[in-house]
Amino acid sequence: MGNLDDLLDRFLPKKKVENFIVHQEIIERNEGYLARFENWKEDHSSIFLQKIEKGYQAKLLNRDDTEVSVHILSSKYANGLAVTFDSAYISEEGFSFLFDFLAEKIKLMSYRLITSDLMISEKMERIEKKEKHYLKPIKSQNEVLINQRFGNILIEHILVDDKPNYLKLTANVYSDSKYQEPESFESLLKILFSDTK
Image (tube, rainbow, N blue to C red; front, side):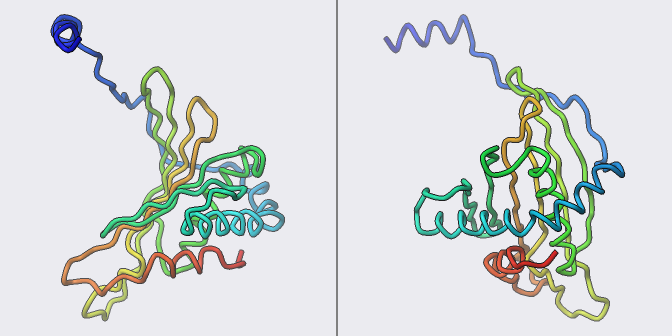
């Protein structure tokens, strides 16, 4: 059967999966969205952070019996987590609010927002929207070694065919001799999951 597959591949090559960027823009929230966001923060933000924290802790113990599906990303220079959207615990707009709320909480940790953008691309006949907040630690003038805090932080909100798919938060650290050792990803999450609005 292998020879037939080789022959078919030679004469009928498989299509490459291409990702075409259709549109890119800066994220701007209108007044109505911002008003609903403020109400959501007061009423719901701590509830969802607690659910994510429980999902994260369960995943560390190799358990999948939580309401929120959390995935852990771990490597030498990048750590993070991804949260799968599920309408059973959060609305579509609530998921968007959660994306913006995570960026707000990171900014309170002496971070500055570098960029917030939306990229729309076509991928395997589906439309993918990727919203991103990219944040870096605020540098002090008198530092001998630069305090990188938790590293540069990227928060992504992925939608496929206009339906929320997942949120991902990644902290990327430097190993350069100009930087202090980074604080742990667990310390970042402890602050992130704390009940401050």
